[in-house]
Length: 454
Image (cartoon, rainbow, N blue to C red; front, side, top):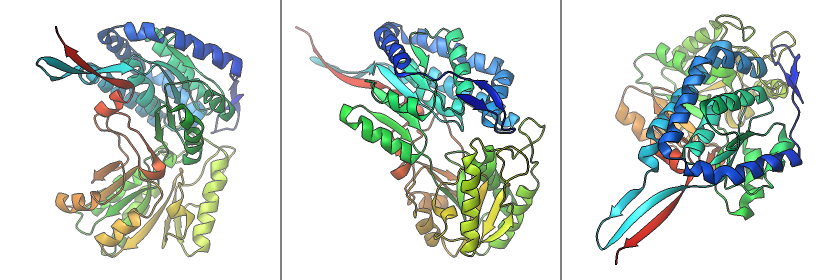
């Protein structure tokens, strides 16, 4: 399988894909040795993960260059991702003992305990848009809880997957506890035939649904993060319209809009709509566009060639149905997979742009007359990952946020993840939780102990 540089369309290297035979060998190795890893005390497991965290920090330039070369993320954003993943892994490691230790529920003639035991062997089928960030959400808590992990990076981030393996092993994770599966969708499909104890997947709703249907008869838990169509509402009492526009523009276009929690729909109160659009457009027009390795570049290339045509179809559909194109709307010149940062107004929910996940540097801005209209439009989606409100009043914002059917909500911010808070979706955005105490415990089985002395 060729590894392609999306900025140039050239081949970086070739990777040999796994076969069913090599996958079986890796799975059997993990299955046989997982009990030994589970027997390692949690302090030692934490110490190894903290060494991995330090290795990420020490080698951020190398890792960022690899990521940018195969995925196309601007180099500074790749560095930000590696450092961000290190921070999340560090939080998980520092809180693992607290949330995975045994809990005494009742003392007395019969002592009652809850213990958190490893699941066994975990499959981590990961994504290309944030291979470090979405990866550590799964394999770090899985390893901390005493599981073995078969990690399949996306075919668009295989070199990054191998780099992750390299530094986990250098940190002290045994090779028989962490293995990497290399290849495309067919390799992912083959993994579903093995008897894993949990599958963690980040990707599209379509693929997540297929995985869930395939493994349902096995009666194993799944953690699915399946993207979104995340809205933001700007209320009429916002104190600084320009600051809101700048922050939301970053939330929509960071990583070329290729984030599960990117802002994909913007609703603005009619009394401030024109001013908001003016500042939003000015911010988008100020960004430097170019190769991801160029200094100061904010918008670069998409990771997948086919996404260029998808975005063009969304633009054409919106314009044909009455939208006004304020900026962009076309493929960037050159051999890479670039698309102009694109802003459309006069949009509505008859347009694919406002209903279907874009996953690129494109946004629609819609004028609303009230908070209630904004709530109804924000909930008019098959997804439910995140939603945000920009408003001066926290009470007003929280009143709106409580009515939104999403796993995460934001007041005066957007497109952010915290290791201390659960990361979960609703509806077609998936189910299960990573991060926080719930994300650590997701990789353990609970067992109730009833202990009575003679």
